[in-house]
Length: 192
Image 1 (cartoon, rainbow, N blue to C red):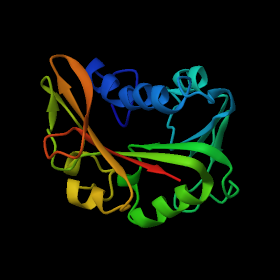
Image 2: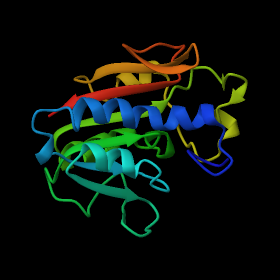
Image 3: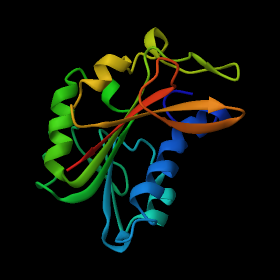
Image 4: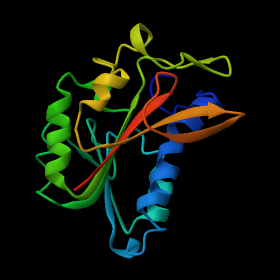
């Protein structure tokens, strides 16, 4: 396993990666009263494993990543120059911000392109290293992570974020309010 979901990714890690897409798609996608109008940009979509979840919940799905593939727009998350101001309703930016050094540039770029809101998610530097005995590749074990965020640094990304964290409890991924040093990933919602 290199990053996110590969053929050999253990089920626990697959759930960790898919969970925010399912959770936040329900919050801002198909269950929203005006979902038929909602568009979404998933920044750093990787191999687009989550595309079907997004298509079930949003009218228009755009995928952006550092590598161009079929249906994926090649982009730099620190400026998103391929996108106009307020071009999409929602932006999901999961497991991405730790791959760049300038976190504030990422947040500013996302805020420029989003019309309604942004959800940022990042592995918790202080959180557990294992889920059910399966290692989470972070810190020195993940050379792709240039600058991981602890709970304090994550909270400082934007003063207006609603903060959440994910945990693995009794065999299930759950979302909890606030940040916790025991959380697997931290999430911030910025409403425009």
